[in-house]
Length: 358
Image 1 (spheres, rainbow, N blue to C red):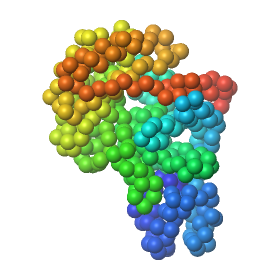
Image 2: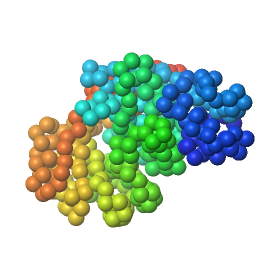
Image 3: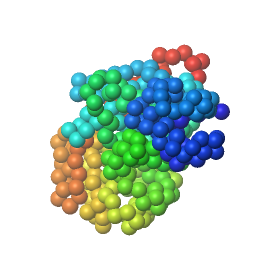
Image 4: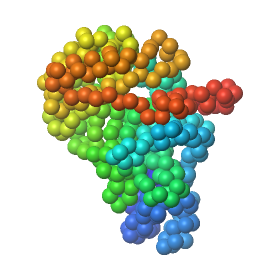
């Protein structure tokens, strides 16, 4: 069956081409056309022989995503709704920062983690994305930038879209390998962050890769009772199991971890939780950074509200007093429903039940 060529790492593509009778040097030619010249069809690869082009056309797709909707915020954030070849819908977001252009990619159709405050989890996981479908999100965004004629490039990636990245581990690693490859897009590993809700066994595996890719943990609560209430993943990987995996990661890599903490009014935003969080992180506070995230309201989760600004500030001050570095992440694209899953959810509601989309 044909598959996306973007799902092939350089080494995988080289092995495949040689197995199909091509010389090794063809790999570099094809790779350059894909990621540096960013061709729209295999036939545009002008220095590649016709036999090789025919072979690629027979076995690979160059495009598997269709742009359904594109929304642009006043702050320059752009949210893309893409349709996959099977009709499922995913979201990708381009964000502008002083340090560069960052893209938030999706790794699954739906999500089974079931965080009670999250829009993405409203639609249960139907399948993993292939590595090619994840890479192609970057290629689609880069194509949009190329069309503007400003010579801008995607410089940063956050794997924080719909789905749990570590639940799609092998495809995630192939994606990271492709976008990091210095012969292609060359997006630095330290400019890439992967966020997990806490699949402890995969944190061990990620640590063993000795990667320079940044790790973020969606923590959101400092004790088991509260975390289990708002994140059902804590039933499988409680805070003790999670912290054991984190300690292994830190010992193995000595790399800083970002802890994501969504601020829910009168749920997890009291001084008590701030003190518990500081205590939880104190033993490795030199390698910890807490990202305080004001909650984005979701219609289906009306029981939650955003913490007051003064409450967030007080939480921040408590962490600071106890030596924990932190900051407040104000959302990009608030005027276009920037919270993950909101655009897709609204579009799905417009579709008839028989459309077959998640």
